[in-house]
Length: 215
Figure (cartoon, rainbow, N blue to C red):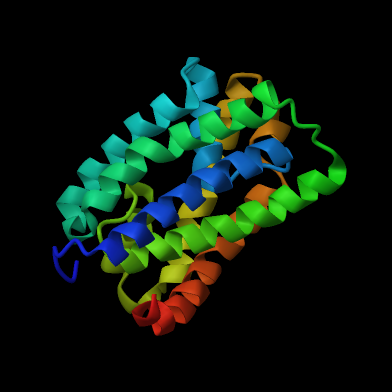
């Protein structure tokens, strides 16, 4: 990372980015058009082993973090820890609040809106906490690991697509083994996220970095 100075602006960017990621996951889950690829894998596996999504996501993030520490440890920081602990529980809380407590009526127009909102939050959230440079989520570091070892042959956006497609397939496999409902974890939203998130992150990073000095 560029440094260890924890300015208020960088901490705010990091926290906003992580909040948006949690909102992204809950938006996708409520839309029932499929979740983002990493959540697809974690929902598939957590359903197979009968564990809460938030707890399993924390466990798998810890496992990936060990690999990140051995390969691209410069991406580990405060934001890494906050992300791996909070995102799953933020998503669980928002789903519980909106569906169980507020009993939100999920109509088709609302589902489409949440699908678009989730896609926007996913890329914008990742962009914000990457720009904050206080460490990124363990899973988001996977694309950097791929580019490190693949060299110039693979761009970041392509590495992100590769990692997203792989974890999506893992999630589908575990969901099928658990005889779960695939519609709850994979759908058009998953495909859109898998192929668009990398390019959109790169797009938003470029736009925000030009203006971040004005924040």
